[in-house]
Image (cartoon, rainbow, N blue to C red; front, side, top):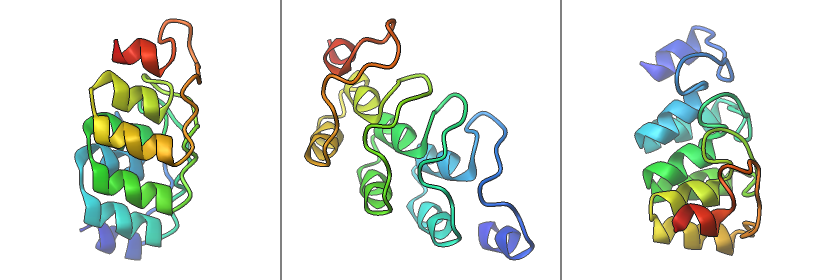
Length: 127
């Protein structure tokens, strides 16, 4: 269905709804094949909007390791901030997603990044 909609001219970077972009929704939902399809269709891997902030944050919070790797390989900014958990590392840390936190740190995530005083940094959210 996603391919059919893209073929019909759907804007791959349109925003709206709870998850904000199709890439964020697919990343949050763990739909690896759709994430790849959207990236291949030109989805902006770093587009930030609303609740999730960005796709990497959504996948990191939900524990989708393969999608996190896809997004990193596609050029996702590992230190992008925004949304309800501020950074992808904070999102992974808040949920205890150890392997994803390790992936993000290996990709250069700033362990002390802080976007919102209420959220603190990754150590704060992990505690």
